[in-house]
Length: 401
Image (cartoon, rainbow, N blue to C red):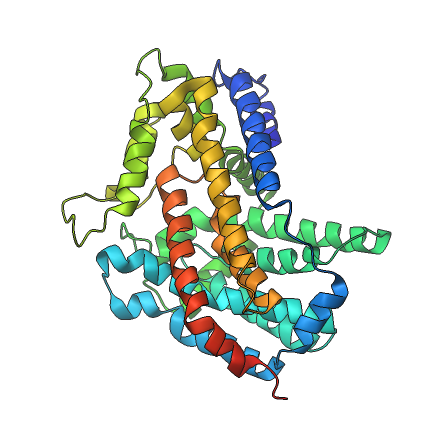
């Protein structure tokens, strides 16, 4: 929320500078996040917290070489599963979840390394590989591996010592510099790698992509970084759409009384194989309607979301918006409790599943349809895997008595 204030300050405006409802959006956003946090807290509060000794016992059960093999196989075969199946229609979201399996094993391996103090070099090599291999993708998803590595390191921190604080600040500075550099070059880079197509694809050789990226980075100046900072603050704050929606609803457009969330949920739970005419998900269309901004959409090969907080406001107003937010928080708590209670699985395995299943929940800017869809699909697919495949896989991963 604080980034919204920084963003408007960057243009020498007060908090109402871009929208009369800027202050109300900040207040509603902060109260909403606090409300959701309280609900999640009470949902999972009685779950016992394992001790470090218990976690080390769980880590010692794992055969590190076999877990590494599982991670490599998942990386080589599962990350390209969507490409193998092509246009999978309604099954595409299931394939997205399956392709994320490698991150479960990545986190499991990282937890094991952190607890046993072994195989550190191997894990660093894995991080460097993931960083380098994702650097030239269309979205340059190097952020994921760094974020997951940070989550792993923070999981076991009980007390913050000066040494840990220094390391944390250095890691944060490195991550911010990488994100700003990417923000400064990404528009031109994406136009280059997709060869002007209105698709989110890489249509050039990896060597060409790397060469283009290197030349762009070499030409960066403070002016580029200043623009990148402004753009990044705008993308991170994401309260602007909420404030603009408050400007327009109900004064120009009436409250939707549940129609927006109803459409979100019905779209997610209506399989395309049964409802072939349900249409194509286009988040930009909704964002344009309620924010009044002229966002580009699928025809231009892009997508902009209104945000699930704005979805909730447009439906129910200042007070009623907390109903869908509260229900979403309950669902997140249910997901956590479900996977934590899978006692047939190693605790580290469960923690990996929980983190990857809830990964999309960190995105404040996520569209309600996308967020609910990803959470529900992840929940269903991983629950099925936990009850069928994962116990068998775990028996193979475990050390033999």
